Amino acid sequence: MRQCPGRYVHREGKPVGGTEARDGTGGTEAGNDAGGTEAGSDAGGTDGGRGTHGTAEGRAPAALTTPRGRRPVVAALMLGMALAAIDGTIVSTAVPQIVGDLGGFTVFSWLFSGYLLAVTVTLPVYGKLSDTFGRKPVLIAGIILFLIGSLLCAAAWNMGALIAFRVIQGLGGGALQGTVQTIAADLYPLKERPRIQAKLSTVWATSAVAGPVVGGLLAGYADWRWIFLINLPVGAIALWLVVRHLHENEPARPRPKTRPRIDWAGALAVFATGTLLLTALVQGGVAWPWLSAPSLGLFAASAALAALTVVIERRAAEPIIPGWVWRRRTIASVNLALGAMGLLMVAPTVFLPTYAQSVLGLGPIAAGFVLSAMTLSWPVSAALSDRVYNRIGFRLTAIIGMSAALLILLAFPLLPYPGEPWQPALIMLLLGAALGLFQLPLIVGVQSTVGWAERGTTTASVLFCRQVGQSIGAAVFGAVANSVLAARLLDAPAPGLPDDLDAVARALEDPGALSAAATDHLRRAVDAAVDYVYIGAAGAAALALLALVVLAPRRFPVITETVSTEPVVSETVATETVVSETVATQTVTEPVATETDGKQDTSA
Figure 1: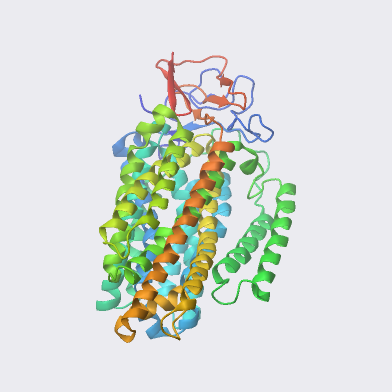
Figure 2: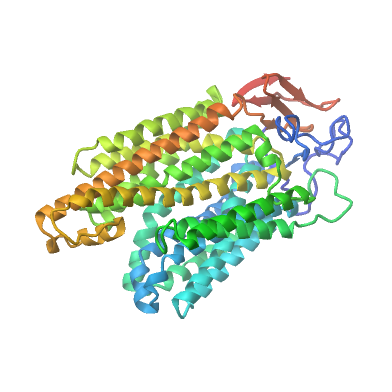
């Protein structure tokens, strides 16, 4: 008999199966355990023990535990994820038309930076709100905000207005990214989660390929405003499916006597800290030098606000970023590991297209297909990863995946100059397979160590760290690439050659304006710069491995729900002693699978 964690119920709001018991003695709604307390959610807890915010899991109705019943909700999740996934790629191809119509060439990069800022800094806020008030209202609000932003973007009259409306889009995009991942974990039990995660990965892969094509067609043959208007029908369908088919009941735990309080001061502090930090990272080395007054001022203000945020969150009754996010070894290690992965992802996503065009001489579309090889193998690897982690565990599976990624990244500088397009494409194909084996087990594993009431916050913290890692990677690797270029161009065969990566790439778009020697020198300089970026990405992979080896517990403390009793909590503490907690009286009529480190032990 399948069952599904979460708290989703039939339209009439009745619990599925039997009576509503909260005494922990065999009722059908998981309430309190035998001792009258709620099931803890992490072996680490807040002090190395069980979590203080224990949760009790409700169960999904029969309609949502079958493939047919889940199908409309999964379709809504995939459409919602598509809105966020395709946004960046579809807009990038229309930048020349947008700038030609609205002007503002000097600030057009904020079309992407503003959206990224809004998505990143709102992730923790939406995660906490979804744990407090439910996933459905947060997801609906996110879709509506995204659609309002899209409509306003289509009506923008100048670049400043378009950037402001892109920020509104980002406010909705933050809710989409975090809440979709959380609902996916709520709907599917541990054993089936790779299916939905593979589907969501496929959405990202398809968007990476289809986005530039659709954006180019709309900008070239219709009008650039259609790249925003096309979001409206997609979002409307997703919104209807969510409203019609996703139903939530009150949590299975007892209601609090007082109304939940929103930590507005903490939310504002997190938003301000993230905005200043990401602005410093995005604009440093671009709008002003790294050691200039604006950069140093922004970093100093970010550090001061970060300290203030810690003080506010420690005093808050319901903090936006709870301390247990970093005190629990499992969650902290996954945060750091995926932050390092976000850092290394900058190498292929940002610098590989430049390499393909400037060194290999490919056009923009062909360069995009070189990168897309990674998006083809990633979802396949992710879908098959459960066959690995069910045998050897989440941690070891992720270590194998990142170790392979480390070797693959180190192989890139060994490619011949100028080489053939299939060579970097093969590297990307292998890298996608390795990262699929790394990311999905960690996300599935960390989501499985917490209950419903903490899953939104946990998922948001993981995605937040990954986004921050990408911003740091763009800043660090951009500085590395430009410094290598500057060093290589000191002995250039012709004077007056550009000395930064963007200017070199533009110069190589028209190689006829340069001498053969100058063109070859620039191409070799770009080749060397990208090689050093990939070496740096390999260093980021080593940091991810270090986080897993040193911090992550050997066995993830996975929470498993039983069929007709409270959740069974399988906890592994630092001494690797497994403690299985069940209710005093169980009415289990079929095997209960206790998940520890991805391994299954069946007991009656």
